[in-house]
Length: 324
Ligand code: GYE
Image (cartoon, rainbow, N blue to C red):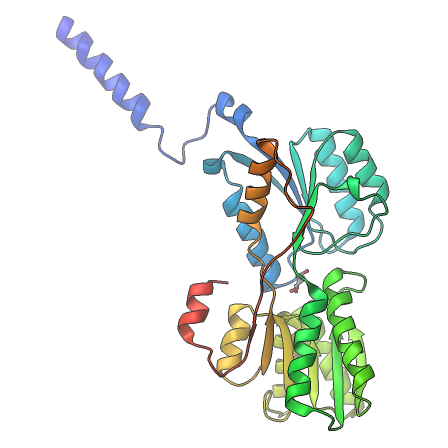
């Protein structure tokens, strides 16, 4: 009898312990200990964005002690403002905001501040007169990215006449503003260069393709496509091919992000130059939260280090190691 009791007890123990694998649902007590982060993401418009979302999900996961509430704003600022208000109502510990555009954040951030929730801005910047409305920002130097692309064009074409098709990102986003400013500055110093077509493709592949199709239909002649992100460059290349033109030979494509598909297109000679924009902000945001948890003050602004790619020197291995 005693033996049977012992056996049952032992089996119960094994079951209780064994059932709790790493993926087992956590207990309410575990849930309570987790840091809750509300992440308002711009959308899912590009490869960059997908890599960015994944990076955040991986870094701020349950195993690392977080509960991430992700909100996809479908590139609409109103949706982000609603998401922020929802995060306040839910009483999250931190808010991470990847803002669509720079303007229009004062009111909602005042509400968040009144609720005492720290705000970490990632990727694009915001423009507010009171910088105490956010704790810190981490992202890319978009103006430097634009200057880097323009400097490459200068090395390739110098003072020769150049007709440029300029595909812009979402108007009013830091990525668009900086990359456009870089090109504009180069236009000033290169009187023989001209933009023959300029329109926003909102960082979306289908729109990039449509715009280049429109240019071709109008019979506008051009030498260079300056696409403010890779997805628009993919669409542009597609439009050229459909028209019987060879991207990289008949038209030079310059792009931004350096996603793995774009780097493969460089190896194939279709994209000529790609300025890196690093999307892996998850671990960086996690490090910032850890600092804040310890009562430390992270730097207000952190620019991530970035490079640029062209065919010479680019290896398959480099693309594999980067992993996005
Ligand atoms: O370049 C683009 C994305 O803000 C850096 O947004 C980001 C930009 C990126 O949609 O692909």
